[in-house]
Image (cartoon, rainbow, N blue to C red):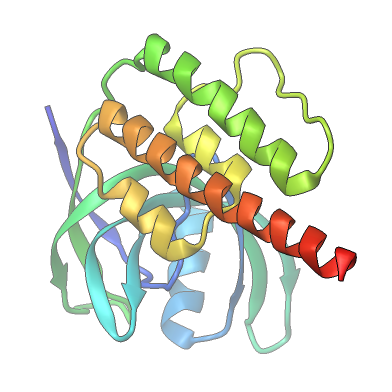
Amino acid sequence: MSDNKIIPVFPLSAVVLPGEEFYLHIFEPRYKQLINEARDKDLSFGIPYANGGKMNRFGSEVKVKTVFSNYPDGEMDISVIGLNIFELNEILPPKDKLYSMGDVEISPELPVNEKKLLMLRPLLLEYLQLKKGEPVKLPSGIPVDSYAAALLLNLHPDKKYELISQGSENIRITWLMNELRILMQSRKMEIQLQKNFLMN
């Protein structure tokens, strides 16, 4: 069953995956207010994914993890931690606050498909080894889900958005496996081009 809630929103061209720590410099008055209230009251807030001036349907629910710096003018350097992925139903305009609120729907996570994760692991290892050019070891039990795997890949925000917009964990794992095959093919071509260049 999905969970509907009203939370403050801070649109950004970023996707923060569950379990990911993300760093922000806060300087706009409305977001200084949002972060101060979220920190002081231990509240979560939403980061809807915005790119090219367009607000997208999915985003990340996060909480303030650490405030590293407070500047005299109220600006801050902070980190947030990803909690959940949400679907944005509606942006509610500011009333008694400087910032907007969002009506969001957070879907419960279904159990992880262990068999699919086992199929994902060797592809993930092969790609990471190709990328680094040396053997890579993953801790036992990693990845524990599609989000943990995506964090290891350091995906571009557009690709992270594609991932979170998939309908279920099983579909996310399938999407990641297809993405890994594309990334591996591209990396193999890069390696071959480098070899050809050195030989000439």
